[in-house]
Image (cartoon, rainbow, N blue to C red):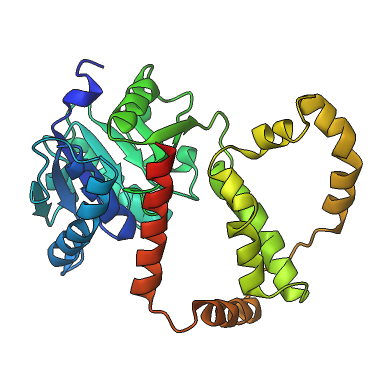
Length: 311
């Protein structure tokens, strides 16, 4: 890599749904120019509205660079045009492999030799997406969490086809934009954090379906309990601390039988239409008539408070 990550001036954003618009907001806040493609007829109005709404949150978190401008964004009807003259591209189009492959094939000829392309894909495998590339050495996974302009985590993944230095450079680029990165060392479906999230949700669904607790109380059990601790430290470090200073090995000795017994009783529900209706009814009851906009605003307000406290 020749340019330092903090010297990047122009970033491409391919796809401007909720994830792409959030990425665009973050990159603009970091002082970058953004070149954006999305096929939606209302993409410009929708994206500008999203950025306007996100800007106060970015300011509250101290993520606005001097000179950052929310209008330093250009819109293109062709993904190849959006990819031109960029030093980094974040792709966030829908999770359909044929569509991803088609888009990558369109943008590759337009890329500068050292441009890195990072996919936001949450479920597709890097090795499958690499099939669209004549040269996959600068194509990586950079999986965010919704909304990317607030949730810091990015999961980074490359493989034997990834050029030396690309992941290191990308890690520094993301961190310069305010992100926290982890390395996924071996490719598995759903990467790392989504697998952890899915494991917890599976048991949460089981508790609701078995009428062990209401959906609202299952949610409350997380937000008023371990969720608070998880915002501070991960499960392994927290359990090590729960040993009272004896360490993780001693904690495992003390509590292995309990955990083995609990794991034996955990459920394996399947998501289907019936389960979806049950969960939707529970979420509606928990929402108590509040609108989507009100709930999203509450989420963002509380996330900002937590992030500011942690900093």
